[in-house]
Length: 259
Ligand code: NDP
Ligand code: 8X3
Image 1 (tube, protein in one colour):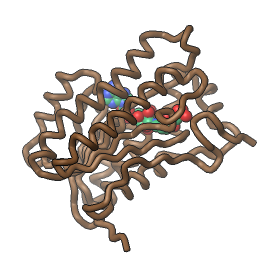
Image 2 (cartoon, rainbow, N blue to C red):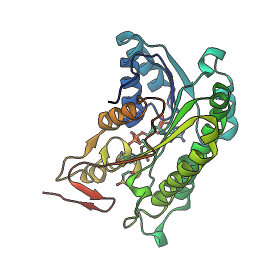
Image 3 (tube, protein in one colour):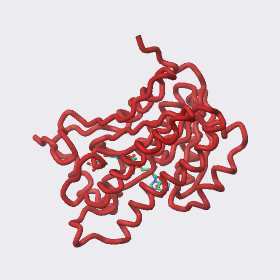
Image 4 (cartoon, helix red, strand yellow):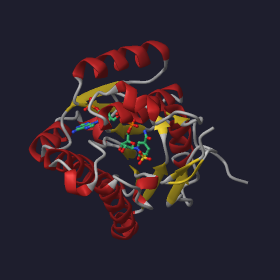
């Protein structure tokens, strides 16, 4: 029988907590009584979320504003954490985006740089700043949010898919490198979920963004928060290595059944 360890208070560090999956995860962990470090670029949203969570739950919330693409800012923000907050039990590398959806020959290099710098290099910078705390504690759990786009490619997905394939590879490598240190590494690879993701991908074009979810029921952020919470609440000897999840209507990264 699997027993859940949801009563123990933990410190959770979430990147990209101002929206979508990250925000829903912050809420889920706070509701469990965990203390949560919420991060992102939009300070106002972080402060509003902190007030909301501390008002409604028995959790302490710490806000850190930084852009995961800026290595120096990532390092100094994480180094600035008060000592007790550095005992991070769970790091959730969630910050990420798609920018544009064009055939490779029409792609915009600004979009490419944004995706590679955020989804790949940002994840590396944050992980490298936090892993030493976990090594010192001789335990920890890193969750990397990949995507079905990191398993198979789809038309016009090119660089976004490449960035998530990189997350897939980095997750497998991290698991090997961190094995001697007792640190769990899990990839959660969702299919389509209705968040601000599509609005960002289509540069604010709401009509195009909404069309991505036409004719079927996509997942919602709370679905991914539930699964992340589940994966991080298993007994110490168990680790979910890779969890691919889609709505019922989605077979893989390129096939969605629309009514
Ligand atoms: P949202 O757009 O709703 O949220 C993205 C979050 O990432 C925001 O909090 C944003 O914060 C943060 N972020 C983006 N760029 C940066 C940056 N440079 N520095 C710091 N934070 C940043 O999207 P989702 O919640 O849907 O996406 C979360 C993750 O899930 C992403 O990695 C995405 O690729 C992945 N994913 C999403 C799927 C979907 O269909 N929605 C499916 C599969 C994976 P801020 O702007 O305040 O910095
Ligand atoms: C986000 C889901 O299908 O747009 O990773 O690639 S998809």
